[in-house]
Image 1: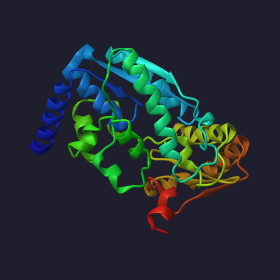
Image 2: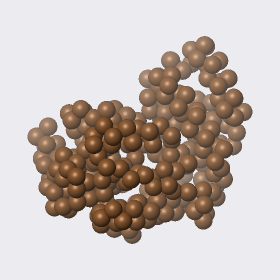
Image 3: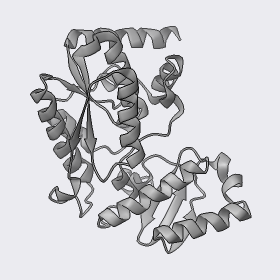
Length: 272
């Protein structure tokens, strides 16, 4: 813990030297921790800027607004019409770059209008091991990434979040709903809603790390292997299959490999 506390001290010093900052806030594990520390250090010289987009789960928007209201942090919500971004619907391998560039351009503009010239986001050191074309957009736009720069891992952030009493310390990792599509499969608003509803159903049933990957009209469910026994109970199987078919999926499958963050990137990373 001494090493973790030293990391946190360096983060506090980093943020204090910024004098003021707008934190790109999604209500995920990383951005919640970053916003909390920034607010503790800088008080009213911190704002949260949150993108509202069809590619983000509706629950994340609500949780972001609730957290800021409870903590007394000023929040600016920016509408981001990701479906109008040229190329986004086609879902190319650099889709995340196209999306991040548009969204962060809007967040930076809103922050500047509010008097906050510096924007920071919550990526961490572990993100460097995955395929993350969005990081290129963040670098091009000169957005700060304090957690990644200071070497914070996801485990570090969860442990310090637990110590700080943040409700997100054991929350599943956040990722936009477009990551559930196979590259090259067109993204539609209807299918984004299907994925959001399906994942919310699983979360409401008590499952934790969940992904519903979309392959045409097939739903490929990823959950923790420890929860397999729960999901294959006959009553659960029947209810789940019926619910997913109502949502719009023709076939419902369980990935026996279990939950894997970024599993759609396997071909790009040569992990097939």
